[in-house]
Length: 579
Image 1 (cartoon, rainbow, N blue to C red):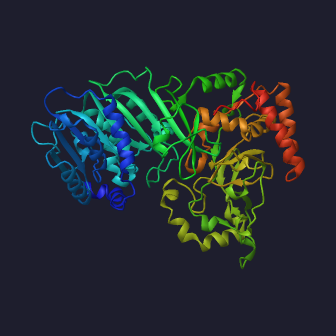
Image 2: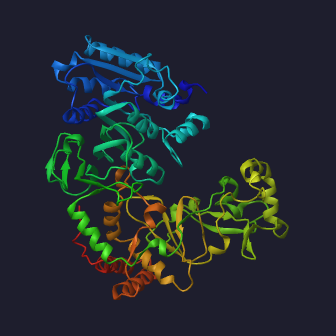
Image 3: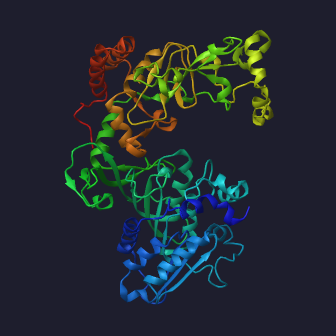
């Protein structure tokens, strides 16, 4: 695969304008860089954009430079899209005809991978000359697009593990070409701050740069990319070191429905307000702006969150009243994955010519989502069952003997070609009619907490009907006998306004329109109060009563009482919700 091909999807997005940086956003990054930069007093001032796109970032950065020093500027820009190079060249020649600007169709990552072995990215004698300013909005695409070989090389070069986004090596590669005390300003997705896959790059960033400020720009929709953006402002250091532990400023901005306390011309201008201010912008949106310090809990791999005096005091109170975390109850698992849903999952089993096959079980999907107790989907097409060909024999999960289930056997045989095409199932030594991820068949009959992975507010419910959880939801079950009350306690905590506040101040991983991600690495850290306490005992009783009476006005009334009890159990009142 050629270097141009490996970026082809990214280039298609850029040529369509999907990931180009708007001038206002480019200006924000450039201004922040120049504000803290210590430019060389004499000689060339070297500037690099390793993924130049249409040139907006370079244009903004040069405009921000004092006119007196522009004549000493040397500008280098690289991109794998010749169309982008042509656009950027015209733009920069028009705005700065007197400057030395070189834009080339080259691959920055090839240079990074080959720094020790030589590279043709830079002319002879120039490859190791560092840059005083590096500004970038690198591609966000996962390394799978580039092919296994490149992905393995990049991962090995930087010690990256798990799923790797292309901007990870771009970020770390910049550290290899940035001058000591030089300044980098990089627009990235904010995913790396809070995901498990980002833990390696978080650690490496703290080791390879002196980070100055991080901005989580949340759901501001600053440009038409399918990511939530962030900006990193960093100084170059001579050599990698122990991860940085001194202060790093952190700001965040997320949409809210709360009343505005100030007004700004746009979302970027809103960042100038004081901490914990709700700002209105002309299009009608309101944003809460936070300013504090970057906190990773003292763990170099830990997720990044904003720490303020208010939120730290609040979390300390919660910690003092926490008995254990949800992980104490059991392991959180994702639902089943068939990799052939059209065969295994249907809503019309009764209409089959041979009648309903054996082995059918009710399927729990996101369409059943309702707090405390599953809802019946309003559309009959969403009420589905799954043909579940697994059982437990002697404590071991195994595929059922189809000879004992003639209708199911005939049905599956009709779809054998499709099912056998799942080569990975066969290669794993499995039977052709198995689900790819069936989970533990013995577990379905026991009570379990179920929740979708994405929702604006937490939606957790208790299943006591033996349903099979689909792969779009997660589930939690007690691992120890006689601890079902812990599951009901968790149900109440998970559905409370308290947990919304806890999530936002402990993780704050929001998507567009304020939706939160309820994934294992977050939910397993949700706190539980002491189950022996009087509040906890009342919480369990109320949770069971709500489950038994839903849907009804009585259940709604009880839910309000329950919410107040949860706050009290953690030493707080409902009014003590930090912003």
